[in-house]
Amino acid sequence: MSLDDVLGRIDADLHTAIDRLMELIRIPSISTDPTYAADCDRAADWLVADLASIGIAAEKRVTPGRPMVVGHITADRADAPHVLFYGHYDVQPVDPLNLWTSPPFEPVIEDTANGKVIRGRGASDDKGQLMTFVEACRAWKAVHGSLPCRITFFFEGEEESGSPSLVPFLKAHADELRADIALVCDTSMVARGVPSIAAQLRGMLKDEFTIVGPRIDLHSGHYGGPGLNPLRELSRIVTSFYDQDTGRVAVEGFYEGVHEVPAEQLRQWQDCGFDEQDYLTSVGYSQAHGEKAYSTLEQQWARPTLEVNGLWGGYNGAGSKTVIPSQAHCKITCRLVGDQDPDKLRIAIRKHVEARLSPDAKVIWDNDLEGSKASVMNIARPEMEAARSALSDEWGREAVFTGMGGSIPVVGFFKSILGLDSMLVGYANEDDAIHSPNEKYDVQSFHKGIRSWARILDALTAK
Image 1 (cartoon, rainbow, N blue to C red):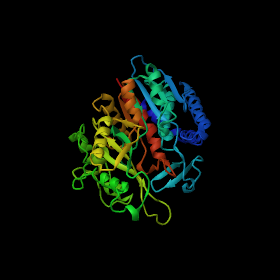
Image 2: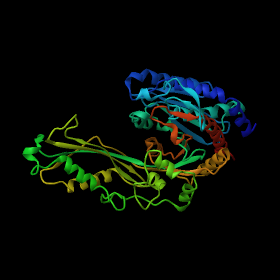
Image 3: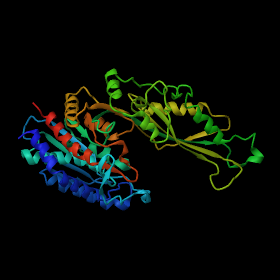
Image 4: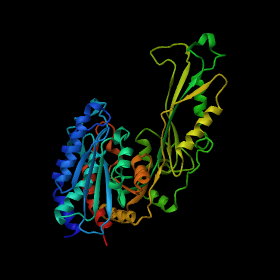
């Protein structure tokens, strides 16, 4: 028996694999809405039963929120490596429902200009991705009777609702979950048909503040002129966050811990098939608006940001109301890279704001603190190059180590709690509309994703 036999089995069983995925998609496992708690339980039970059907000892583990699914299987070799595979079975809400072209939990196969797609909530994020690995294991087991390495399966049910149970669960079950490396399938390809391993993820810092001026809203005829206007004060402070000439963030110390991208990684990025013009024009931009000294990909993957996510205050109803508002509000987030420290950065941003307050203005900070460091993968590990070679063989072009503009906190927790490096391989496309109406997953992504994992398992266990 050979890898070719496994790949042939995957090809032959594709239709039944799609049927299984569509069965899982039909379960409306929306983790953030208590109305769907029973459906999250049902999705966890479905996964336990499916893993059991291929000989994997799996259990649904209760948490204060949605359950986890944990499964284990041994290998046919005592010296085989041990991998932890992570995915999540919960999905985002479906609103606005009227924008869906078909019911979100009644998945369908559709023909598109780029081939057949599976349409439904969770098709890409993350049920389709999760099932690529399960189906690769199913085919391997069917052909060989056993799997080539020890595998721990770890499926979360709260990823789309902030993962409140994740850290306590990892700490409580650390000994059970430790492995040689974690495999994560919750990412996308840098361009259609370009296999990608995410080598770095940006971290996150969230903060919120209120500028307070007069003790009550004031008549703008009585106080307009001598009165401090918190909205005007807030606008001035927000503008001061940025250097208008360079596009850099102007907060002192903001770039502490930011590193330049190595030359070889930049080469891969330049040759990865990313279409900057399409990326910008698809959302209505004519040009990039960030740091002028860096390419669009560098800005997205390897540079930090400070974004204003919400500004409000005063009167927002119909018509006009001539007031100077008592308060103005601002929500910000920062995407972090390299060794930036979210706690130190929070202090720097607050210092920046407080130093610029006018007399009679004061600031109230939100105390619901949230922040996580960036994650940088150890691409020097031999498993990384083995996987990159396996992906290149499957997709017929060089696989690339990419960055990601977003954050996947579980990767940092795997490192800090379990001591695990992670390998992030996903097959989603940028047009999959995850978190949006009409989410889809390309049938090619599902099919070649299964084949890719079979190749990676083979490469990781080759002597």
